Structures are given as C-alpha cells and as structure tokens.
Amino acid sequence: MAFSSNSGGSAMSDMNVTPLVDVMLVLLIIFMVTAPIMSYPIEVNLPQPTTVPNPNPVEPPPPIKLRIDASGQVYWNDAPQPLSVLQNMMQVEVNRNPANQPLLEIDTSSDADYGILAKVLAHAKNADMQKIGFVQK
Image (cartoon, rainbow, N blue to C red):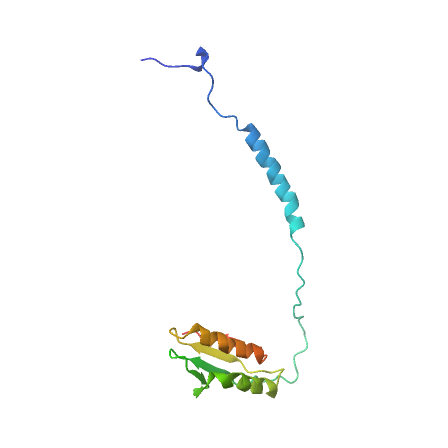
C-alpha cells in the first residue's frame, strides 16, 4: 500500500483564511462604531405618576355595541342602522362629553365585507372617536 506525503514537492492545497478573517474583523469594527450613530431618539410623552387620587372619578359611559353581519348590515346597539347615518350618530355621542367618550365595540362576522368595516372606521375617525375596540369571539 502506498502513502503519499507532502514532502515530495507537491503544493499544499489548503486555503489561506487569514486575509478573510482580517477583512471580517475590520467590517465588524466599522459596523460596531457606526451602529450607535444611526440611531436617533424619539420623543415620547408618557403620563406621569401621581400620588394624589382623583377626588371625583368619572364613570365611563356604557359602550356602544356596533355589529356588522355577513350581509353587510350594521347594528348600533342591536338596532339596524344604514351606513349613511353612522357618522352623525357617532358625532352625537362624541359631543355629549368629548373628554369622556364611550367605547365603540366593533364586532364583525368572519364573512363580513372588509369594505364595510373600513367605512365604519372612517366614520369613527371623522367623528373624532378616541376609544375603539374590536370584539373577539
């Protein structure tokens, strides 16, 4: 059985990875130095804690239950309503007490048209409703 050895004048076929490691280390240092520069602060107004309890707690009004069924019919507190009057109804609720608005609970059927939901949300935005929630079943 014959064995071959590298001492017989044949060239070594291993790749020299030292330059590759050097380049990768330089790139790593560049990214580490420039990464903090690329971030910038965003100002967020957070509520501040108070130790004084509110002397007159305001009870929120009852929520508005808005349901959209599979046929596209919209129900306002279980009463069917046309889509065209929703914004006026929402505006009336907002104008009662703008600082203490009711929660608009939207319940949609899984087969409901997304366009109807988009119109309802647009009406709520135009009426300046601040509290909107989605009901999950």
